[in-house]
Amino acid sequence: MVLDYVEDICATQPKCKSQMLPAMTPFMERVRKAGLVVAYGTRAQNMAHWLKEVAPAEGDIKIVNTAQDRFYNTDLEKLLKAKGITTMIMVGWKISGSVTYTSVGAMIRDYTVVIPVDTTAASTDYETAIGFYNVLNSGNANLTNEPLKPKSVTLSRTDLIAFQ
Image (cartoon, rainbow, N blue to C red):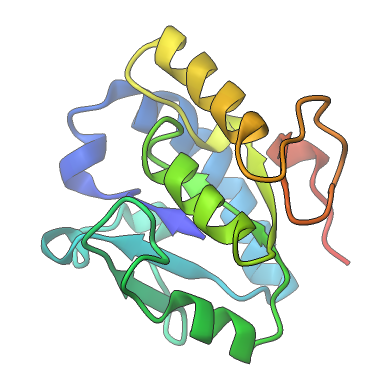
């Protein structure tokens, strides 16, 4: 699930292009090579403005959202369930906003969520740390960061994620 890797946001948030994108670009290449389902979520005005390095490809799921939780009032759950998805890797701007709210939405719908910490951030280091704490302490809390705890969030890094 790719959230808000769009020009309007990344142009005003230096961490998006300087920290997140360098990790996300090779990770997305691995995701594509592995043939994984990729879903994208952003507001309507941003849907045509994805960063070219991680932009949607034909056949990808695209969710136009009106709330930070990409499940809220969208078909995301229906589309993921139709593809048999039970584990989500969630990336994007920002850990203390859309990534937190969408991960909570995923957990209450029984998804297991992995968030690579190198593919998300917030405006300040403090806000980023709070965001990481919040996702581990939300829903089916995972404060010890147990790998792939069911129906919970695990924090990882792109270089530690393998596809089976």
